[in-house]
Amino acid sequence: MLSYETISDALLDSAEEVGLNVWQSDEQLDPHTLLRTFTLTCLPPGQTAPRPSSLQATMSFRWDAAMTAISTIGTEAICKLYHGENVGCAHDLTGCAYEAALALEVAYALPLTLQLKDEPELLARVTRSIQELHRGMVDHKNLVKVDADVQVVNGEMQVRRLKARQVWTIGDALHDLDGLEDVLEEACTEARDLLHALTQRFTGNAKLVEGSDESPLPMVLESDEDRIYLRPPTA
Image 1: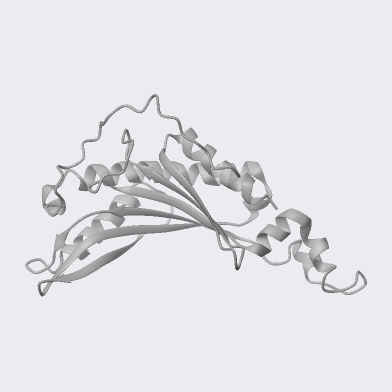
Image 2: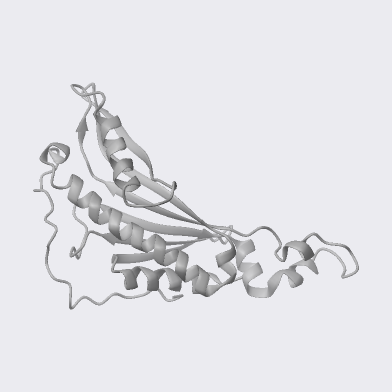
């Protein structure tokens, strides 16, 4: 199985090759469980830093201690810790200590302020709009699911932020770099296109961002030709 470092590096390469505007990458390690989390944060085209009124996309995956062990020392070495070579083992059939799969989550954060008092159906309409926009761009059924951050302010319900989420499940490609690169390139291309489309659809609509102090975000911002992007140490 491919290592965490190889997968995170492949994700960075795919994002850069398809033209995703990567702002930063983060790596987190839980010292108790040794769970590792890798996250890319991407901004709309041409933007060099996040703004309160701008959309963001994140691509992230988790890598637990078992996957680290399997990708580092292999299945056979792990089996020897629990039984002798003459003992039958289901792992001999699967070729892995368990059916390894990686969940790549792609999330889009939309900083919209929606007043639900006069238009209670507004949230449902915006949700359908996001999903229909995504449906029109792809030829699969793995559409984003939309979560809303709803608050009660002065007795009135408001939506302060929407987040659209999608999960790509990677299985066999974890054992083949070429196959992994194909999957990641497809995911990054879709993320690039949907982030661009969401920016065009929502940041240009004054009603949907009327709670923001900033003007709707233009699509062409400052140039970042001289920008230097630093990869994390493990990648």
